[in-house]
Length: 323
Image (cartoon, rainbow, N blue to C red; front, side, top):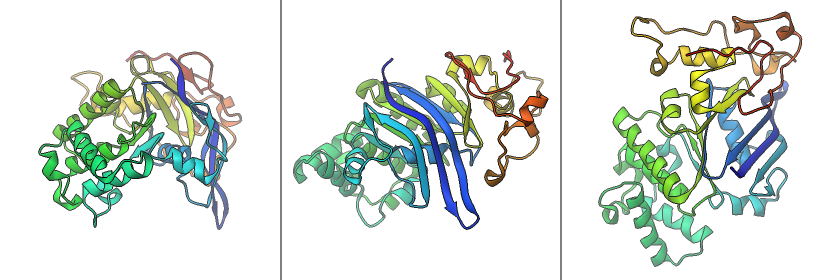
């Protein structure tokens, strides 16, 4: 599968009063053409920071190094004009909370039309007609009427569908969905996932799905990258990773997920002991060592690199676990 987006040794740090704070440490990932890559991990592990760095959406306090190549174009260090042409047109985002991402003083139709006029150059009339088509594409009923609604007049699920319509308005090469089903009930969540699945099938869009919901991952993703404390610790095909996790952190995530319950007699979910390491105090060693049931002496003195092959893992004591 041809990679459309490649991240190589991507690192992100932020300037603070106490010195630089590392948020993402040498992340390398590939997203194939038409592929859904899920990026999972606990809150604060660097998933969203990694995604925002792709199109240069981080604040000025951030320092980004490494490489991000989108269909042959290097984005790290690219000029403002190049990044403006990429945002929305080549790489589009679905953010976590649509109510704070949509402008409350403009109708949803106006906001979709603005995207189309800016990036595609359509006339106002043509852009409005296309906006109605997009609302229908994402499953919003009575699109001709809803185009004149303001965000507060729509339900949470409908606002999320509007965000998706805006994101796919210009047929982007890569769609980054950052927790697209957060705070939605199960029925609405299933509808949003159906919309994303249909867009991938009809438009061939590559999707980077950022989530901590392993049920969503199992339902939609082709491959999974597991992040912990700013690093990728395991990546594999979704079926292989769920069936045979090799990193102890991945095994812990699966064991703590109701969707991955092992047996009917398991009344209590497993837990991962300890705390996530403080970013400012990360040692040059395995950051999961203090919480790991398979820790070796090497884990506390040296940092493991990702192995080669289709199932990659960064662990000194990796094991093939049957789930």
